[in-house]
Image (tube, rainbow, N blue to C red):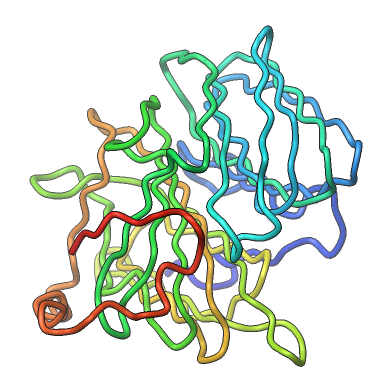
Length: 294
């Protein structure tokens, strides 16, 4: 059985590399994530090699250079204050990130076959939607999803959940290539709002089937990561008093870049109950205007 010890990774106590997930050290084929904590004026260079990569400010701002292309990322104070702009670099490129103000930067990545051009997306152009209702209400920032942004394999989005709510719910999976489902590895990177007495907390559940067992029920805090190689996952639980943010990075080797999920049949009925409940009035938590979707 795959268990919590191998799938939950705690943030490094000191930077600059807080998170470093690669296909090699995750034991899978496609998806990676690095999170960097960088000082004002610091410059970081990286080669994308066979990967496509986003440069996403979690806090702070930066200038990203890729060959003759350049993008000034305005960024944000934190993931709880605004939707951020971001940059995309395709495979086999050299990228230089110069930090204007110190901060934390996420680099979700996926192995790629095609080499696509460098691009910049302004915060105002990020598709923001509200999903669910009642205590399952959450905000989704569609950064690099099949419907909103062209990429080769990478799928990435942000989810913000008000304190006391559940998201990634009902529990669902995407680990088979079949009608209505695609096979995608997934990384959850968490940040939790602080309270008056210090850091907040949240919880993540992952469970499998008799044929492919997996069992995780983990307390998570800011900087922690949960890997989802397969199985049902959800809920992501925001404890009362502490808003929850997570970044999802996904990729797979199927014939189509698509996010199609299968709800756990025991809990799928929950979606039907949403029609009679209002969206949590605390949403949206951040500044971009949302589009409404059920």
